Image (tube, rainbow, N blue to C red; front, side, top):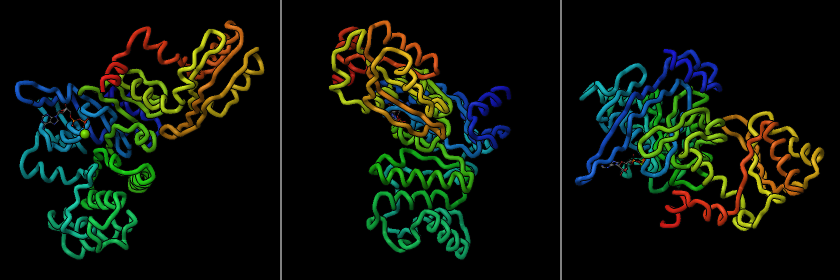
Length: 379
Ligand SMILES: Nc1ncnc2c1ncn2[C@@H]1O[C@H](COP(=O)(O)OP(=O)(O)O)[C@@H](O)[C@H]1O
Ligand SMILES: [Mg+2]
C-alpha cells in the first residue's frame, strides 16, 4: 500500500488518479525463451504499476524485451514467473474462456497494423464486435461512431490496400477501441510511419486518452514518441526495468546507464559533429545545458554574461515539452580565463541548470572507450 502511494505521487501530473488503485500491476514478471541450447531471459523480475488515465511509456532498445512485456500483459505469452493484474483481474491465473473474455477488455495496436485485407475499413472495425456476438444494429452504430472518432467516416467502404499508413493505423485504433477496452496496448504503433503521420496518430491517442480517460501503455524504441504524449516512462534494458518516473524527470536526468545512453543518443543529433569535435582547452569549453520547469523561461544565461567576464556563444537551442513540463536545452561555448569559465559553470549549476560538459569525441574515446562506442564502431 505504501509503495502504491509513493508511485502515484511520482505520477504527479495525474492529480485525479492519485488515490486510485493501479489499473495494471506487473509483479516480478520473468520470461525466458529457449533458442537452441541457449536460454534468453527476455524479462527479468519486472515490476511496475500503471494508474487509471495514464499514458505510460516503456522505452528500450531493440531486443530489450518490450514486445514480450506487452504480450505477457495480455497473456499472449505466458510468463515463467510473476503476476499480471489488469483492472483487478489476475490475468496470470486465467485460462481458456475466462482468459479470452479478460483479453477482450484489452485493446492492442501494432506496428504493421494487422488489418484483414479482405475486409473493408468498416468490416475491420466491426470484426471484434461480431466475434463478441454484438447485435447487428449496435455494431453498425459503434462502427459509425468509431470511424468518426478517428476521422475515417468517408473511408468506411475502402479496403486496407487503398489506405495510407496513417489511415491504416487509425483503423487499427478504431478496431482496438470497438469492444470498449479498459486498457490500450501499443507495440511500436508509430514506428512504421513518417514523422508527420506519427505526430497525428499520437495526437489522436492523446485525444482519446483525454476524452475517454482511456489508460494507454505504449512501448517504443523512439524517445520522441514518449516525450510527445506519455506521462510516465519506464526504461527497460536487457529484460530488466532499470528506471521509472515522470517523463520530465527521466528524460532530463536519467539515473540509469541505459536511460543516459538513450538520452545522449538523442542529444548528440542536435549539434553538428564538426562543432563537437573542435579542439578545446580550459578557456574554451563546450556545455550542454538543460533547464527544466520554470527555470526554462528565466534568462539565466544572460545573467552569466552580465555578471562574469566570459563570452557565451549559443550553438544550439530549443524549448520543448516533456510530459507537459517545459524543457529548455542549449549548447553553449563559454570562453574567458580558465577561472572565469569555471565560475560560469558553477554559477549555472547553482541556478538549478543541468550542466554537462561536451568533450571532443576523439579526446573522449582516447581516454576510455565506452562500450556504446565500441558497439557502434563494430556495427
Ligand atoms: N518467441 C521467441 N522465441 C525465442 N526468443 C524470443 C521470442 N520472442 C522474443 N525472443 C527474444 O527475447 C528478447 C526480447 O525480445 P522482444 O521482447 O521482442 O524485444 P523488443 O520488443 O524490445 O525488441 C530478444 O532477445 C528476442 O530475440
Ligand atoms: Mg518489439
